[in-house]
Amino acid sequence: MKAYDYLIVGAGLYGAVFAQQAKAQGKRALVIDKRPHVAGNIYTENVQGIHVHKYGAHIFHTNDEEVWVYANRFARFNRYTNSPVANYKGELFSLPFNMYTFNKMWGVVTPAQAMEKIEAQKKEAGIQEPKNLEEQAISLVGKDIFEKLVKGYTEKQWGRDCRDLPAFIIKRLPVRFTFDNNYFNALYQGIPMGGYTRMVENMLEGVEVRLNQDYLSDRTAWDALADKVIYTGPIDAFFGYQLGNLEYRSIRFETETLAMPNYQGNAVVNYTDRETPYTRVIEHKWFQFGKDDQGSDLPATVISKEFSSEWKPGDEPYYPVNDEKNAQRFQQYKALAAQQPQVIFGGRLGEYKYYDMDQVIASALGKAKDELGKLL
Image (cartoon, rainbow, N blue to C red; front, side, top):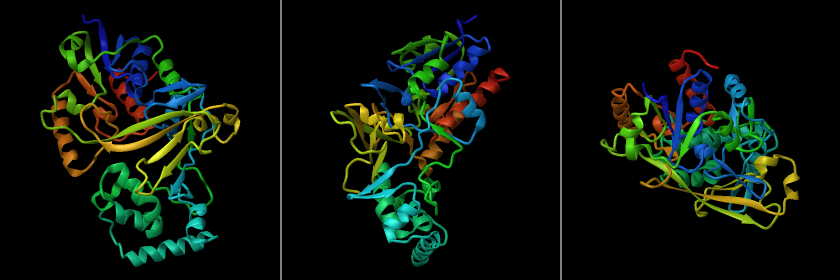
């Protein structure tokens, strides 16, 4: 008999959810992670009273009531609403694209006028069936908004011309003919009070966790400890990149603590011109304090500039490049994974899939139910 029922590789959200369910049902689980902390990319650390999102901004949002109820077992959520601002060469626009955006762009004041302007630009472009991201964006918001608020940001984020990117990437572009500034169409939304790290720690309460442990460097020894492995790392790394590596976009952060109470007045400001090297600036305190101005009582603030880059070994992989070449390669790796019945591949890297946090939780709960027969 092995020491554990499950070895869970990765102490991020997927691994923590599965571990919590396994523990609740009396299973012996060991969680390991190569980092010195739990919570994976949603890790937050306290800097002068501000919960800093070390690996980029994470806003929890979902329409899945089961997931929302589950998350609230481990954290209280504040009332933060994601209302980013776009900065195009010093001009500020509302994101999502709404009536404030249209008024600033064209001087229109009614939804009918905004719709008429967009329809005229779509007709002028003559796009019937969008074949790439550029055509998709123009068909949604017209050429003016595409040029100022979509093109530069997207090309910085993906490192590719918009005409070389698939249309589906921007199908979720939020366009509203109202004055609603909420970026997400989600019934539930917020940030865990106390930070994401505390939420994950609560999920892992009573579960054995070992940090600074690299599974792939001594896989045979780790596998000998448990009946099954829940693997949340990169699927191509698991197989030694034998079919070639899957491509990702990565992000580099420049984080500063500034001796001022308020740097930009908003949690998220996107820089949508091509010339500004970073894609956005995050001011972390405004995730915590939302629309209240309480954060101005703190004498300091923490900002992070985000620089998108092509992934290379040693970088943290963030966004899968879901083009045709990578999709085919992933299917080949998936076929190899099917030959590993004692290993479950899960999460953003294990499934080579862009997941929002609620989707990670739903996926992990679904797999736990398959494995354990019920949810607790």
